[in-house]
Length: 193
Image 1: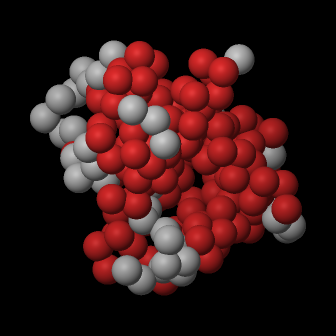
Image 2 (image 1 turned 180 degrees about the vertical axis):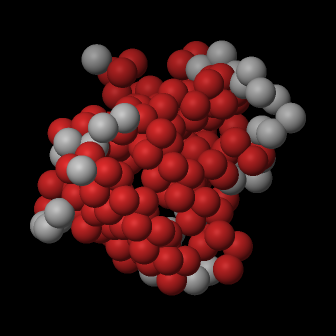
């Protein structure tokens, strides 16, 4: 039990530091200090920094997906309004001084030259789960062939993360909401025709 608690403490510390500062800017020593353990103890739980970075993203996976689900469940209106609400919720989050964008995308940029890195594999799996969830939501709403639309919405989500990181203006997420609303409205009309 103590080993599991130590591992969780390390990953929580890595999450705070990696999300705030980036994975390359944060040393293993800094993570160990943040967790209140020795570097040796950290390496007892993680073979390498690469494994720790993958664990950091795995730690973010379910909370991130859970946020999208929660935002969708709290939303009202037709399917296009409910999908657009996801972007509205992201825009609100992006106004926080602690907001640093999508940890999965930021990590993938830092590891762009290492496509087989464990963190890239973890990030790909997360994004596929997000896309699959969007597909199921659209299918439940009666959208025929929801997979291409789910991918388009995911592209809008990821694109809005990138543009808001660049410009520091959450209005881009609201513009992406309008684009998603239009795409979903067209698909909903085609499904009912």
